[in-house]
Length: 339
Ligand code: UFG
Image (tube, rainbow, N blue to C red; front, top):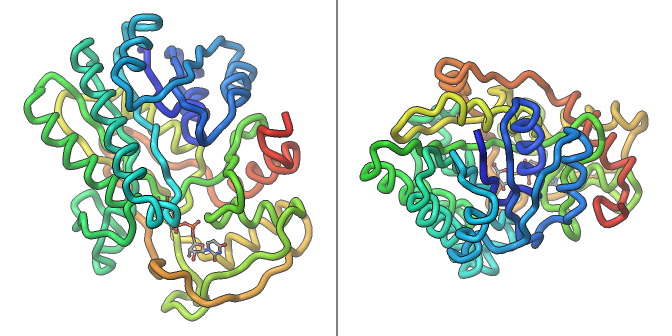
């Protein structure tokens, strides 16, 4: 298959590109480099020994997307990972988040349909589930548009739009992948997560403390109703997540489908920090702070549908993710900027 990867130079995009190429598919990356660096695409080529075209441009611009089809098409499928994803920032810049995260879908779908793609895979989030009574979340669990931040709302809005588009294009496959918490890095240490500024998410923050660029880990609350009082999340290794995109494409049937991509195993903040300390080989400075506004005590999925229908199951655990993240961070202490 020949695949257009929108947002292909980002964290999930680079790992998905590697997984596609290793499975014998072809990939072309479209990325505006607003959240990553061109060197990320070179690293994909280095890992796979295959050339990977990178087009630098805005996936929300029909002319740009058309140009990619003209120069690099035809494509069998589009994987859409081109989004703004900082939850906190989204509350400050709602217009930017709604417009970027929806306009990319509109442009990619408009051009993709006109050019005859057969599959469209969309990167969504487990935060669309809204009723904690449903834990572990299945694809049938209650979703809402009334979520705590514009980022999550924009993802749910996309799902609604895409379901309507699928309905009137019966030959098209539209697959929604609801990610839980992506962590880890490729075991080569050549690609990984490279957030700008001070990271909001737990593993990149812990990793920056380990590398010495941040002082101490802040644990956001240890008084939740969970076994050790800290928040529970379903951390999925980005290599497993990437594999999920490949099988979703390979097994795609016409119609609309939704899959959770997670491990099904909740891990607490304390457990993640302990696992990271094991990877680093020393204890890390940490302090317990108050709860972060908007956080829930627990979120994790039931990944059985993906196993049943796609034959996909997460293979890697939190220790693998911490080891691989630390391998990436310690060999690239300044991320791609240091390359
Ligand atoms: N946490 C800390 N300290 C930190 C950062 C996080 O204790 O410095 C805790 C949080 O309170 C939470 C857990 O670590 O209990 C995970 O927090 P993250 O910020 O890493 O992840 P979230 O579950 O809040 O959200 C993430 C992404 C979203 C995405 C969601 C589900 O930020 O983009 O996972 O995919 F939508």
